Length: 447
Ligand SMILES: NC(=O)c1ccc[n+]([C@@H]2O[C@H](COP(=O)([O-])OP(=O)(O)OC[C@H]3O[C@@H](n4cnc5c(N)ncnc54)[C@H](O)[C@@H]3O)[C@@H](O)[C@H]2O)c1
Image 1 (tube, rainbow, N blue to C red):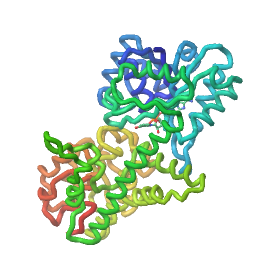
Image 2: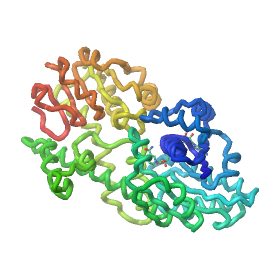
Image 3: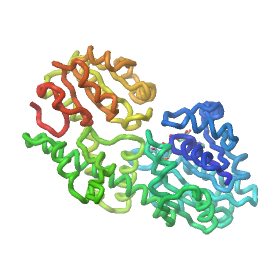
Image 4: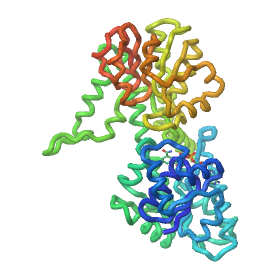
């Protein structure tokens, strides 16, 4: 099939490349000329494991190309996937990029009898595709739904594992408002053999939000329990969670032994969730609920707990060590999770800001994410030293904070850390490998 993907970021580019790998003819469109030029040279502008190799192979097979010109590829496409950003603006979803795409596509539809299915892949609040996107398309094309098709196909990939998630998805949700779009989406995803759910566009939109809201809720409730464990004393939240994990409803016992579902990685005390999805999606859903007169009590609490969680680190350090002024502090991990360069809403931004406010001497390590982190933290970056060798910096540091669950940092305990304060905010290392007086974490009272 001929597919145009509008927006070539984490979702658009990964989707476009993977669809081309499966045999479709794909054009990725983006506003940014630099991004398009780079992609046509075979160099992704984002970091995602396996993406450079796949991009090169689909370019070589001529099944993939990038352009800034939306009109040329949609002239022959059967599907246009909208995969532009939907950031948060004062807690509500900012749909301006989605609207703009719909208007641009509609302007093209006005000039041609060509039938195109417009499918939203961006995360949009329930009711967006069949109202806002539809209206923009109808208004700018002068045509009614039917003269074009409409669909919503939410994306569930996780950064850092995006290629694997797209190529081997747990499910594909096909939301549509017309039979022709349903048939096209079936054909698009025919090479995938996984559970497929056919629903209307509102349901598809809500599935994506419900999924993220429920995962985020689990993280916040675990962190609230962890904070309580620390306050109670004599109890480590990680031991508590291990006990919870053994409930067979979380980890079923089968004849082959106990299953250890991935969901358990969300049920570990830590410094909160970040990234380009959970925080903004939960905020957007809360705002939608409140605008409809619902109190949205749980999602409010999920966000409150999460906003406060990274602040635990400096406050625990200060309780333990007193003023941090001039203390040599190393932060390991700047992205919101391992194996990505994405720092959007990363806890490390708040941690670094808190450390600078406390006048600590701050060094940070995360080569993949350093450039994005500098942009995110702005002028404060001048007061931070960014390192390319974390092991060497450990020798320099008095305080080492593990801020992402990057496996490599687990080697910390094989270095000389005696007398240094190790703050394991992600429960990566075994506390027994550090002198009790030097070990700090979330969910366990100070020694
Ligand atoms: N990043 C994730 O892990 C993830 C996972 C699932 C869903 N999503 C959702 O997918 C959507 C995209 O997220 P992302 O992380 O890929 O965003 P992103 O910011 O990485 O990429 C968006 C791209 O769209 C381009 N763009 C903006 N307006 C455009 C226009 N009018 N025409 C052409 N290009 C345009 C931008 O230049 C940018 O390159 C969001 O709604 C997000 O919530 C993201």
